[in-house]
Amino acid sequence: MIRLIAAIDLKRGLAREGHIPWNLPSDGNHFKELTLTHGASVLMGQKTYDQVGSGYLSKRNSYVVSHQNIEIGGSIKLVNNLEDFLSSFKEDLWVIGGAAIYRHTIKKASELYLTIVEDDFKCDRFFPEYHDFKLGSREGPYKENGLTFYYQQWNRDS
Image 1 (cartoon, rainbow, N blue to C red):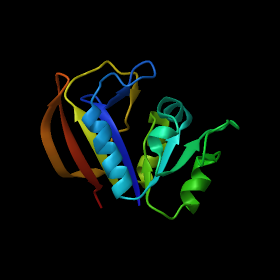
Image 2 (image 1 turned 60 degrees about the vertical axis):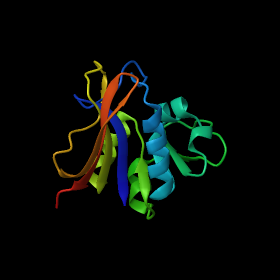
Image 3 (image 1 turned 180 degrees about the vertical axis):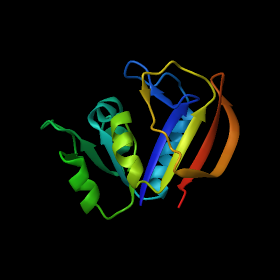
């Protein structure tokens, strides 16, 4: 099963100028709990890997998508062909970003785990439309660092 997990603002914004424009430590804990509980393989793009590094993703099988032959640390595996990888990968997989990787994998995803931050952060990177999904559950509202946010789980509408 392929699951996408992301924190987005009210306009589906993911990042601005290469950085997440909010600080929600509890969302980081939520991310860790989910990705360790529901299968421990994660897929990300090179920019996401550059931001989070290998230490943050310990105890998970990690895959980094890049068309370049980059140096990556530890047991993280390089993926040069995303389509081939997705066709042959048979385990549960969490897609953790960035925007291009989400766009290329959402059609194959069964579930979305979204943290919705109630604000517009004028982002320049966006999560794709997800009209093919139906809201399964919603938790919150939660408040942290002056922000209100919700956890939502979406299922593919079949």
